[in-house]
Length: 139
Image (cartoon, rainbow, N blue to C red; front, side, top):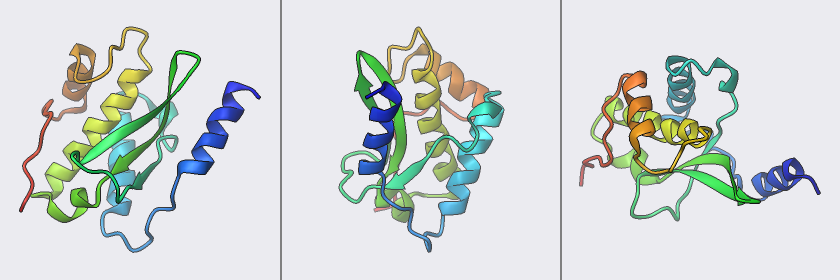
C-alpha cells in the first residue's frame, strides 16, 4: 500500500459526516477558505475538511494529524460541540477556525516544530487575527 492509499483509508475510517442542520457549518467552510486566501494558499482551498467530535474534551478544536514514516500528514480539523454552543461571538468562532488552519499550514513547513511556534504566530499575523492560544467561553 502506498502512503496515499494508507492516508485515504485512514481518512475514510475516521471522518464523520457534518451535521446538515448545524448553524455554523457554512461559515466554517467559508472561514477555512478565507484563511487560505489570506495566506496565499489558493491551491489548498477545498482541501481542508472538518468535522464535529463529541468526544473532544479539554480543547475547543484541533488539527488532526497522522504520522506515517516520520511524516506528519494532515487529516482534518475537529471541533468540539462546545465550540458551537459556548463561544462568545461570530468573531471568536472565526479566530478559532483561523487558529486551526494556521496549524495545518505550519505543518507543511520544513521548519515546523508544531504547536504555537514562531512560524504559527507569523501565519496568524498574516491571516489578520491575534495569535491567541486560549479562548474564553460562555459558561
